[in-house]
Image (cartoon, rainbow, N blue to C red; front, side, top):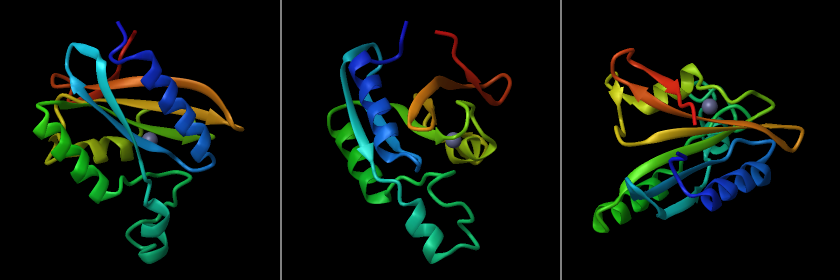
Length: 152
Ligand SMILES: [Zn+2]
C-alpha cells in the first residue's frame, strides 16, 4: 500500500523537476489512514541563502542540501495542529544522486537521537539530467535505530 495519494506523489515529482538542479523540499500533512485527505505543501529551500550568509556552518549549497524555510514549517505545523492532522511525509530531491537516505538526511530527521517527527515518513526523489530516475520512502526503525527503506 502506498502511504499517500498518487496525485500528491506526482506533485512532489513535478516539484523536484522544477527545482532542478537544486534540491526541492516539501511536506504532506493528513490523517494516518486517509490518503485522500492528504495536503501537500511545496516548501522553499533556503539552503542557498544560508550558505551565502554563513558558508562555514552551511557548507553545502542547495544542489546537495535542503533547509525548509522555518516560517513555512511553523505555519504548516500550526495548520496541522488546528485541524487535528499529523505530518505524514517529508520529501526532498537528490539532483544527480540516487534515492538513498544520507547521513545528513538522518541528522535532519533526528532530534536528540530520536526521530523528530515519529509519524513521518521520508521520500527521496532522485533526478538525473532533468529526469526522475528513482524514488524511495524511508521510515524510522526503533530496533535498528536507523531509517530503513520501505518496500512498497
Ligand atoms: Zn537527502
